[in-house]
Image 1 (cartoon, rainbow over the protein chains, first blue to last red):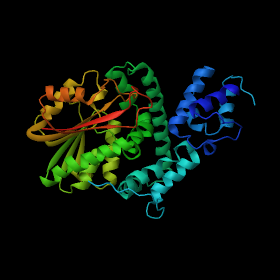
Image 2: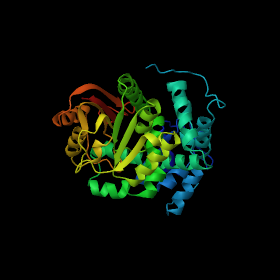
Image 3: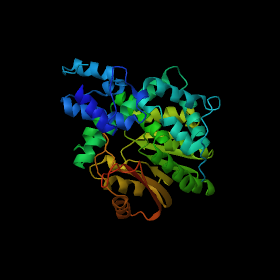
Length: 78
Length: 310
């Protein structure tokens, strides 16, 4: 989770961001489509995975995102 | 042409379909939730009126709008992904025209579900396209109106948006769209039919590079087609062949805008203008518009370069 938190803090330029399963677009004011694709691409690079467009679209909260990563075999735990 | 701006909230009764788009974004694509309020704040009732009319006429069947918006979101994320790569590599993915044609123009599912809805919604969601359309309407379409334009050609029709705009605004005009894609033909005919103008318009499936009809149009539009070729010059010469000597053309190109079917990388509007002039066009007006501010100094930003040529 540390890597995910790092990515979110870097993309949003906000060191106070904390993540939980329910953390969603509604919780981070500047989470728009540009930031969304940047988060997803940073995660791809960090975790060495590739998201489908469908997975990018569906990842509207951190819980969903973690679930997708776990299904891809990534070691991401709360 | 004045653009009305407003800090008011969108009236959901006056703009029921636009409000519906906002609701779908909030529910299914919450990272897009700010799009409609921001656009209404920047472009006001003029934008909302146009968008409402398009939505009402184009997406009247249940679930049509949701499917089209999903297609747009898929399309936009693909574009954003390609742009992130472009910011680093500063080159488009190497592809031939034939490859792009097979992957895109002749790919029915992709065209009808993503690419063409993406192109259509881009006219309403992307600020630089909205401003570009204002330039088109105020500088070219208005000229057509003043001169009682009787005919036009649209080459590379895409979703049919520009043909529809002309037909909608000039009730006496007749037009011909030229394209190589059966899917574009189908989508454009649907759009123009929805606006009740199909009796004044036909789409001809024809490659104007190898077989340009000569001197067929007094008014010609070709919007964001040039970057789709390995070498745009034969196509541009085809446009020149099609336009009558006294005619006028509205020709645009996308710059620094990676996309699945963008092959020729224009980095500046001057590059486009040089090619148009090489083909025998003369410049009358131009406009360059950027999609947004550069995220950092020197980072390329997608632009549209629009030219009115004689």
